[in-house]
Length: 519
Image: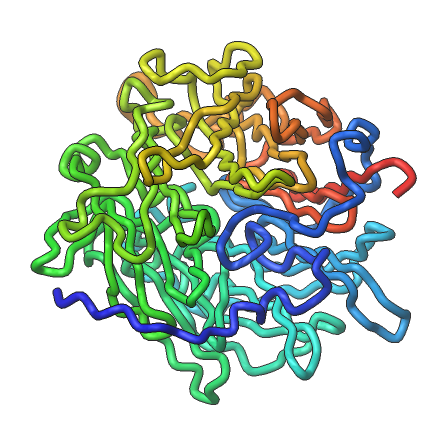
């Protein structure tokens, strides 16, 4: 397949961030999926110990398999006839969208989408946690001339654009992806909205999708890494580079660049039309695919460091890689700037091990760039030691790295590892405090007899509960724990931060808001 030359793109990446800086309008807080609440001031290492439950709200959403509520997004302010409001938006697995008043913890409005699409014959995995036939994408909020709009894909694969004040359609629902597909968090840049698909649900090909919402026809294009694999199922969907380039990691599938097959690779795609600009494929791609060690289970993060735009990615294998966006993988597409040793998943397990979900990154007051990675399972005994440890981590942990230069090249230097977490969801960083939810979920997939667990069996095996933790960003010391406040577990969850508050959800369709005392 011909690689298209990279062109300079003037993309309005501020579209999704044009509201007040304290808003959290998309998964990870921004298009680069950096998880950084850059303008947060109320939360700090000195105040977070006083965090408490502000409210919890049980929503009338029926969980489907392991799916329940999406990661929340937040907008502040929203101007209504009642004044300036702060709204928390969350999708529900049973084709629901909820807009909640952040001050009162009450529903401002909600919408149930009507699905008339017939289920595809022979839908692989339908009715399982692999293909739950559920609303799965984290919504996206954008500001336009007509006011704020919330976007979400319903189970029938249609993109909805709703007036955030009252829920009215901005335009008629438009087919974005196949019905019953498993699509992931929405992202945006310029006039385009992006999502990703995986697992072959709804017979949708795995890949990256875009829609031009500025056009009356709402044209849709997609890039598939392969017709039979290469799922893109990182929690945050695709990431957007600072010049509009789209980045996504694919999962297990054939790799043969000559025939356009890019399993277990990092893709760099052109804005809008999703032409392949460049790619990076690990040297051990055959091993990764043979052992089911998907890279597609995590969303890469994009950031600037010392005049370079860098991307960090990983996967179930348990190693991290770092590439320069100017030439991911170099001339051969197989050599990153930096490749770490295995930090987790020493036994090459396919479930509940490795790096999962999404990262967080920030620059501290001294200009040091940090990276935080959610590690599932115990640390590898062969990995370099972390200077700061906080106890044994048999179930999982957050791992912190500093981005440093060595011999003129950036490297990831281990800094600290948190205490045990079972298991960590994607972290976020706010004013020197790292937040992550320990899901409490039973994460095994295969029984001792080789059969797969059903969703009901996994739920029955769950003995823990979701717990929100706050850690010192420099040391990994625990600063706050929600303890038993959240009584259910969460599956593929995440948190949002806005104006001194942290929001999370659980499998029993309950939304939680935590805040600093006296906020």
